[in-house]
Image (tube, rainbow, N blue to C red):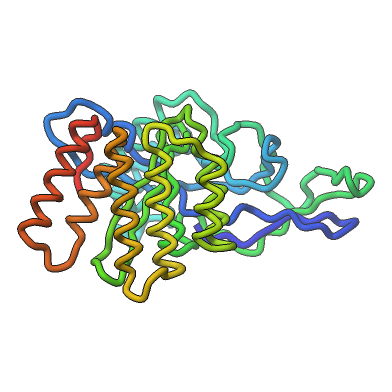
Length: 315
């Protein structure tokens, strides 16, 4: 999406800014944790969202914009028109398979739309400048909503921010990037975690620190916040190294960054983390001038990821 907006107290002029975040997407990542005959590609489908005031976050946020049953039927009918005659909107122009996949899950879903920052379902819709909310720290002055520009479904951040991945119930389950390294072709990179490990908050904190301060501060923050669980610490550390190497180059040609990330993924895979093995397979598969040895390594780590329960094809 492309969004420029904020809320502001009419008394003290304090601003309440929306989170600077990645592109929000639905994914079938959790469906790849299974016993399947062969891996299949990851499905990533852009999510339509709406701006709100989240009561749990106590600030501006975004929530899912879920279509109702009749809306889905109307969209399905309009999708039969030629592309140039359809209304604007992601659901009118996405792939048929993606539309059917999302529509099926929307019809089966019982959970209400969730806040994409905290996962809660208690929020106040922002539809007009007068929000009805009061700023308690400013003697109850009204808080106004200023939306300068909002286009749902279109990207606003660079690939460096990546895509925040959510399952069909609106639960945050990982991040996906397409990195453009100096010594490699475009390389997809995937990060995920156990829902009970608490890594969602840790990841967001580290990514914000990486953006504002640099990779060294983000890595230091990771060391203080996150005990290793199922190799997630090593996986996150390797991903931060890759992101830091792209935005804040550690070496002139980036080789050292790639080597350190490679070591982190190996440690994650050794701890039983399938995504560490998958990223290693993708790392070898994306290398330029791919040699026979590189192909062998890519196949090895792909099989290792499958053995650990992740049946996800390489991008």
